[in-house]
Length: 337
Image 1 (cartoon, rainbow, N blue to C red):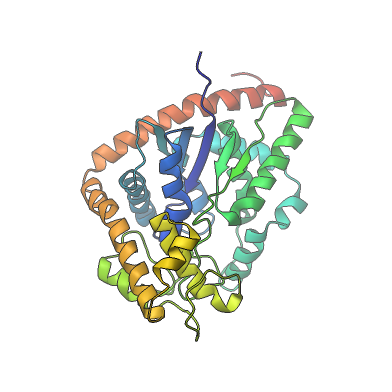
Image 2 (cartoon, rainbow, N blue to C red):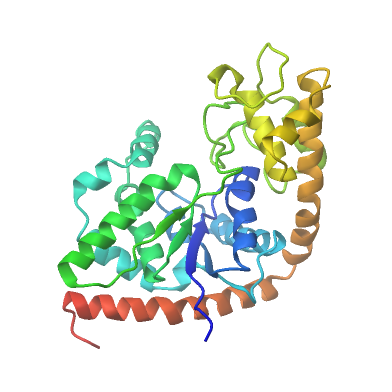
């Protein structure tokens, strides 16, 4: 008898445009893991509405992300690809866990502090921004996930999920699997081209900040050539904040090439300066994204095909999520319907 595959879940919001940080830190890793794990990958539209969204754009971006998932190599025959709001168990379990979540835990979340500080300058802060780590916990726990592929900046959210699961299990009996973090060794944290001490974000307004997965080759080259570096000449990996720009470019090159640090540094041993580094990083980015972009442009013009994949993925997800939710409702004392 074969051993059942361990299950993993992860998701990306359909807001903004996906960057090479999303690709290298998440999608590329997801593609490799679908060969080994029982995978559930979702487009987390419920998380997206923690800040205001244009309804038409949200629908368009949801299909865009679905097409990028598949174009990047996710196989609907090997992984369930679905939209979070199509599986109502996410919202139901999110509310149940919210009722168990201490406010102190939520107020300590670093991303809430950062995002609320930005929003406070423009508008009132919605309760969803505070509570969304609990919905994220529900996403993970619904599928009894053994591990969660996350970027380094998501460690705190996973720890919160583990704490919440353990709290529920203590109060209501053994219900949830306690998940482990699965963080890639290479490309886990791609930084902004204009702000190499801050993570590359799809929500930053500056055109010079990020390379998007659907950027045209000439746009990618222009952005890379404008990337912030320093006044030196050494092209080496470094933890020195002054060398953050060069380190980031080398990290991008390494993540796309799959080479060791030593091999990457050897590639630039005879470089004439940072211009050579930027050109090389631009070219490997363009060529690595080219097949994905070509496939994306075919898929995005087949909305019926995409909708069918998302419908099938949601059915697969419900089969697992609804079973977990039924156990939660029973354990917590809800009357069966």
